[in-house]
Length: 580
Image 1 (cartoon, helix red, strand yellow):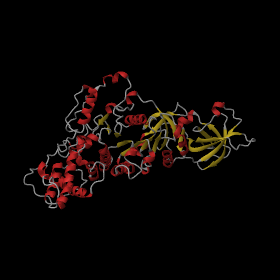
Image 2: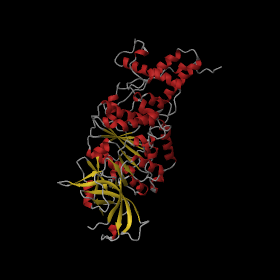
Image 3: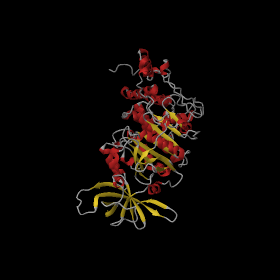
Image 4: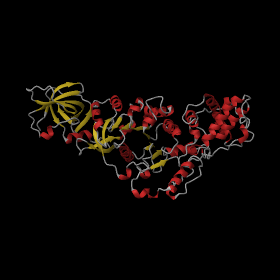
């Protein structure tokens, strides 16, 4: 093959190539444009480079060149004794006059050839559709990964593809997916357990102090005086529960607060009735009515949250079975998997005020279980809309959630807890967290701030590829980092229809559907609407709105916790008198 160019300058990882006017290649082949791979023939190897710029400005009429191309040097193909092998980086730099050719399909196959069995097929190269694009699962998982892209570019479909392929390659890996928009419930078939507010049991006593305060105060900052009381009585309530759970409560000795071995964050059960009794007891010892108001407000706050049906997953049956932490973790994180190694946590039905706390609990427990089990059972924690929980702005969101996600990002790989981040606004994501993701799948991003953050995050020589990001098509991806052989422009393969993400509330425009939308329909909707915040046991009677059946799980698999008994309703009678 006659070369179509010559190296005319070299600088670090960059080179400039003159495109020859007298090339004997077909016109279609000479059309070397931005994004194409080229090979530079050196004495001992073939250097693989990518064209990042082509220009014919300032060319002398006496030159043999019709254009000048700038290329990034990415790696080299070494001719070993048995077969050619590709490696990243350049050991032998090109010299002036070395010939340059468009890369061949065979050379592309050498670059992207799977190096072992631990590879997944995610699509094909945009430059040559006959070359399959493989991703190294071990590198991708152990060093974390992120999928970035604006709404509507196929991001969710790409996530479904990646996770399904990972499940095939690593059947023993457990996956936990935070599904913010309830769109992945059908993507993984019978390999996934789908959890939502109707079938989740997450006992309130698993929440640490910051998380339970966030729940009680509805996401607002807590009142300092009330926080001091809670911090004092929660360890005592844990001690009381531990003391009487295997013995008769009658005749129990008073507990000396200094002898309680639990802290406010120790994950052991306690009962709300004991908590409120301890608060009530302290309130009864006070003579100053204004001081009692603080205790009264705190008890009222606890009762309001406990009686709110939206929080049933935390407080209903919260102590049945005693210490059920093992069952909770077994159920959430699929140990044993029982044929379902994946958990899809649908968050759309949870109260907005409590989502951050729930995510914080789940992230923290995932990391802590990996830490205390020495990482013997790997878990991939996938966080959809990650910028909501780990915002770059420290004043936005819930601090403990960001801390929990950050902890997985920084230390999780040592304990078998891997992180997958999906976001449409990488600029709003904590830069420290995204910098820990060593494999990036970048889809179309139009925002300048997002592109600037990517340029800072991509350390590879092919950072110039990011100039393609605003013009990528649907399902097109730029893959960077450890999981891929080279920074690559690829297209995700087609996903089977049953694996396509789809929101549960799919809007239909078929006219016949709206024919029955009369006042009875509206009334049935309002009944469900009001019932969600008034009566836990109410269920809509309208056949149009039969709720999907909730799967009944075995007692050993689903932890059930018991509601506490209420206190004397007249205990605040003094406080109800008007203040003078």
